[in-house]
Length: 462
Image (tube, rainbow, N blue to C red; front, side):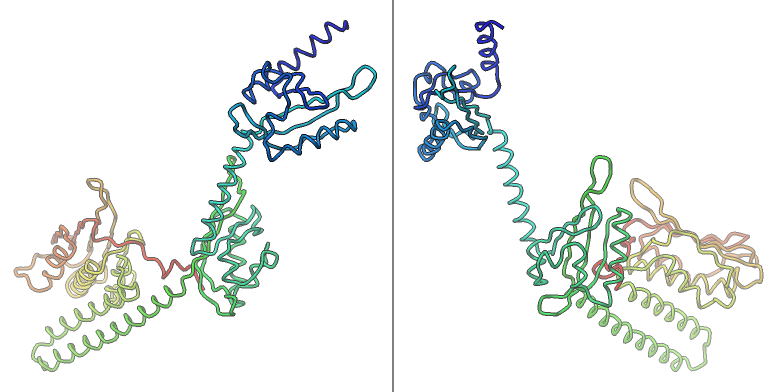
């Protein structure tokens, strides 16, 4: 290859390189400055050639150039290192530099070749990553929960500062399955089984259990862990938190005890009322005594249900079954309950429905379907959509009992069956005395519905 062609070829490579390529003599005077160097530093070649390379070196890094020139004179290659250089406006530019000795035809070192890679994009990415890490660390260490992360197999490799402050442990002690050491011995095996199911299935995990504090006291925590997945849906990471619910559990327990006490006293009051009724009537009207007594018993049964549910409501199914129990000797297998088990009513609606079903069941046993050997009852309830909202649709249907006749007069029983639900549930109530059996139909708006019952503090077990 002719020398002229070779020189032109090398010059073309240098000028079209994306890296800044600069040559200088052993005193640091610039001998060549390619187009990439012009773009990187913003200084034209004609301004730099013949000038000292120290123009683009910050004042606090001038000793770098002394070291580079000394090593080049000794024939050393200066491997890539990261540093800062100056642009035309004095702005510092992060670069990665490699320096090699230049030799003449006799092998003497006459200068140096410098390649500079622009690191601004990498520097921005690093700065953004550092900010993200700092923000995550600040968030993770300042939330009130204990927090942790595990790999896809459930090996815990990180805890926040709250965890260490609470447990008084170190990462070396807690890494992997070391966390078992701070679990209560009565619960740890259950928790291990529970969390292992989550690791195996990839399903979110929720549990409650006590954790030992550094002073030896155990406190209760509600734990959630959720998997993070890649684009293929594979679990790559687990993130978990432990929330102290000790005070909430204790508060809920106090409320439960108080409600049980109130319920106990209310039952005593109802029993006293029953005794007063019996003594007042004194056998003169046994039918009145019986009616009042069973209605008080229905109120008591409703109250028991609501107390068990912390007065957050009761399901239609539980209400219905509790109120049919008083005629269980004649209704066994003859009353069919058909509806979703999770339909829950607010307390006022639950009380009204319970009294109505109690009255219907009593009347069925005396005069209706349950007063004959063949009669049966179907109690059906559904949630339907009407004008974009849920509507409770409920029907009591009697069949195969004695012939039905509409009563000639209405009494307090009708108030309980019809007017009370209409007011307490804001429901449309129809009572049809069909020839083949009584039909009681209720349609109530969604605001009688209560939220699905949750155990205190979201517990799943002890």
